[in-house]
Image (cartoon, rainbow, N blue to C red; front, side, top):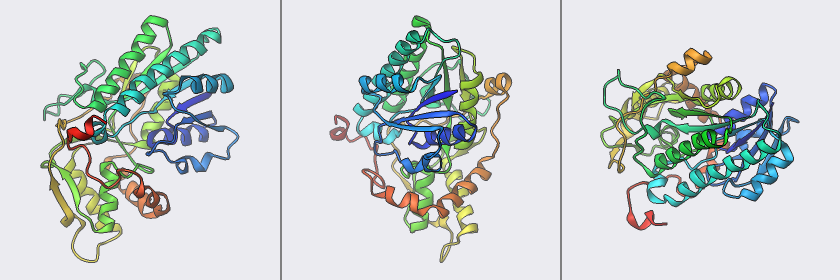
Length: 355
């Protein structure tokens, strides 16, 4: 199988590519190389005869048509997206253009290609999305997101992803394009771009800087190790039922405050500070607008239909992640100089929001 992966130089996309090549798939990595992309993420497979790279933007329809014509994929895994909620608050336009218009371009180019190829039965368009499209949950562990949960996005980011999900379903219902969809919980692990919570906490702690926690730290997330997610995504593109959606969760709920304290405890063990605990650096900051209280995924469908379950607990995954950052400073150090990294974003500044 030859898989065309969009956003393959990003965090989740690169994990998919590394695993796919390891398993013997041919992979075409299509990435625009925007600020959060890093080709070092796929350096370990870059010389493989199974791997090809195309620098192209999903907003550029002509470029996409050229890529499809050259590589003739058997499946598409569409991960390219603007994904940082805080950035979506300050500058929503990029999220509309990439996540909505870009997905439209991918769908329409894929449909045209699929039809020209004689509508091969095995072709799949796998759209990778987020649990944030479902909105926020109450603090009741018996209530979780299922594939039937009504959409209720609360941020420009989640609204753009909800829109893209609807487009994918429409292209299936209207044109017959064979699609599968997945909605995942919060990912973490190696190669996580250093503007998201877990890498920010690790790198700030190592630098002796404050560890910022929004509000009172009570917001709850379900944490999914990125390599587990990559395994689930490949399983869905291989065996998922056409037209079906699958929720992928780590079965690891944690408040943000608990998560940060856990990271600090791991750092205290593996690289103790000169004095005190890294937890002494925890600093509560003003919450971001529209901050969802809780996300939690019920992964029953993917477990029961496809036999998938996460392989690591959040405690195990966090220790693996902390050790990876300690061992890979040459990867993350240059990224700290990229635009917006290390700055407080998502404050709802109206002057920025129009940009």
